[in-house]
Image (cartoon, rainbow, N blue to C red):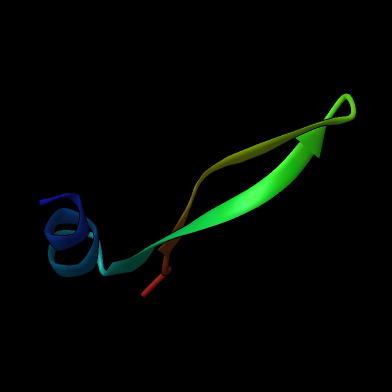
Length: 40
């Protein structure tokens, strides 16, 4: 549903991927959401 709103109605992209990152020397795994909106 979110992908449809962003791609069809806002003319953008929604990408999601799982990443591993470190914060204060502790490793975490979580979702990385990237929303791109175009100025067209």
